[in-house]
Image 1 (cartoon, rainbow, N blue to C red):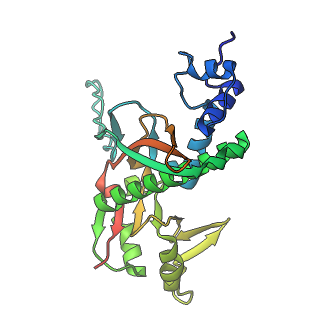
Image 2 (cartoon, rainbow, N blue to C red):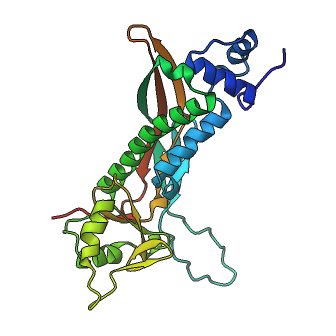
Image 3 (tube, helix red, strand yellow):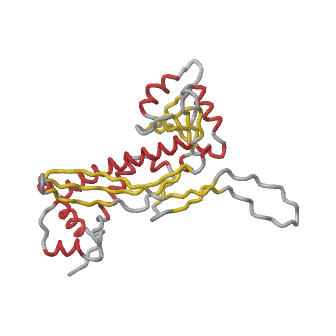
Length: 283
């Protein structure tokens, strides 16, 4: 019999039919149980889940994101050292580069969803769309929340209420070395109900809008429902790792005639340099 890998459409079809509890042909059973695939998620399904997670957790595009299996140590470049004068003929030594080591392990994020046996009536494409939507939504929310918790907890704290003055102070406090690429990260509701209310066109242009984006004194604004504080940060100094592909498992519940599906993701993330994020923490 021909062998089918996890990237093949034949394996995708057999795998999803198995997840739905549909009866498989002899050939389909052989495809999903072969040693070559090990019952892994089909490549297209895995890619769909990951793409939806990134879309629903936009902070994953903001940070330095790794996909390295197991525990990982990562070096992040801090502020560069200045060049030194050189005496002609003297030995040139390599300038020291300020590297900060970040150690990442991984915590398990699990989402369980249950659907009645009518799942068998769905088409394979409709089932895949439903499953990837359900799992990616919850996993993305969990990861985005973890990123903001770490960012807001470990950044440099400004214990002042949000005001035009504290926003300017945050900009002044952020070292110039981290200025390129820095953005304001803020809760969407807080931005539109509080920060926009600080705008006083007679005195300054605190907030501007250009090409579909808002800016606070020239710094792009990124909104998220998971943000609880206003943070000015160079998010590339935040390192996250997804050490393994998202896993999906299924089980039939005979007691209530339903199917349960669990999605499991591993994630860890840390802010490498505390002063690369200035948090207006409130008074």
